[in-house]
Image (tube, rainbow, N blue to C red; front, side):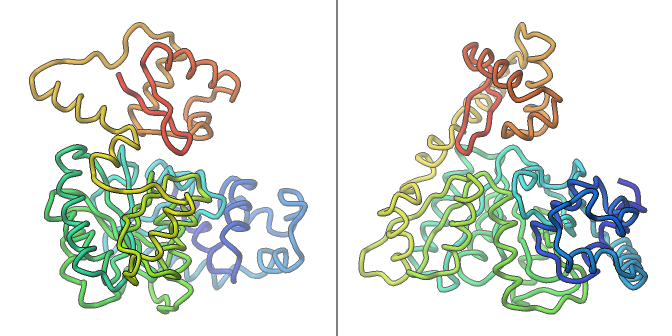
Length: 376
């Protein structure tokens, strides 16, 4: 995406409050931030159902917004911050499936946000010794079973910081999704961990520099944690804990949700126990169970084969159309149908037919959340 396109996309976020779903819809219909600017006085042409308030915001003066966007781009350039706009290949592709995905993200780090497997590990800020032990054991075991996983959390107290630190210790890349700009860090006491993550993961946010740290931003960022992941793992939560919000959003996005059970009288296990009881979360007992539930055990088989010098043919005798699907899955990892449609250009009917043929031939496997996985 050109600098000009990025400038206008950032400016769109500076005009005034527009809900994330409305913002995304406008970008999707117009095609880019610059196109929105060019059509700002005739918004009805691309969004007939838009409100008068939305017309007033977008149809108003863009001068201040463009000045702020230009300043933000200069700040990002000076501080080695990547600007990821909706539609870019570097933008987290799993967020493309979410109706309220942010149109701009600011990222500092070296991890691939479109890693083959992405999970989030979340929970209470008052992590108990039980929760700490569960996180340590789960991440250590996961490393042996499925080494190529990006671990996402919110860099908060408790479960979050435990997840990040254990990911670093076990060689996983880990990304913290922040509720403020990259010019500051909250909580400040996690700065050392955040610094390590820049070379083994990264920091990601939808908020530009000089953003005030406000309570609603922490709730809003949960949708990014949920949306960019394949699965949500709730370690510990009180009956009305904040981790339940991310779990609910994950369910809404069609992601798999797992919860760690605890004793019935433990305050910070009540939320997890309720989710499991109400069939709103899968029971998480071990990393092995998790990997099996997600269908990721194939990765270990492939890794072992390669370590023994066994070369597995990526594509057997496939048609040209089937190869297009296989190559998309190889490049981007597990993808849902709507993303595969975009990457291959096939209609939904054609795609379903090809995927069925490939599944019958042992080339792909349908996965949790409606995604497809390349297995040979």
